[in-house]
Amino acid sequence: QVQLVESGGGLVQAGGSLRLSCAASGSIFSINTMGWYRQAPGKQRELVADITSGGIANYADSVKGRFTIFRVNAKNTVWLQMNSLKPEDTAVYYCGAPIQARGSAYYTSTWGQGTQVTVSS
Image 1 (cartoon, rainbow, N blue to C red):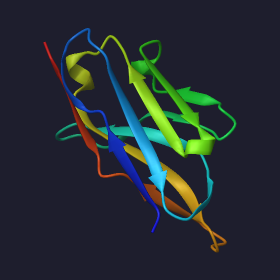
Image 2 (cartoon, helix red, strand yellow):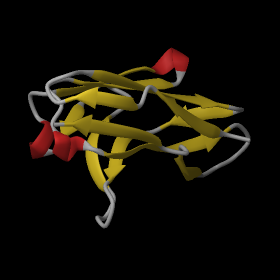
Image 3 (cartoon, helix red, strand yellow):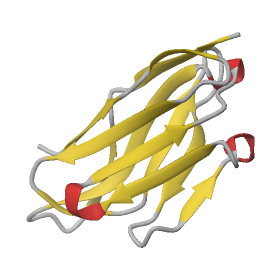
């Protein structure tokens, strides 16, 4: 069974940094664009950043210049480096990616369990 497992969340003061990681495991043939999303209480899930298998990154305007996404394809892992954190960055952060399992002809949308990031003022 293919799954995504996140780690690295926690509590940090405003202006601080955190690094999230997300590792895919299982019988994997291919992973398409990997992304980080977040959902704050009472709000919809939103894209924070994503990165193609070729390394092209895309960021939400609210995090540009503060967050960096990077991945290592050989490790099936994506990271999100978050600097200059603000209280409005507080949310549950999810990793998501379309993953093609070995023996499958299709990509399946796959999500991690989420990790809480809390930024205090």
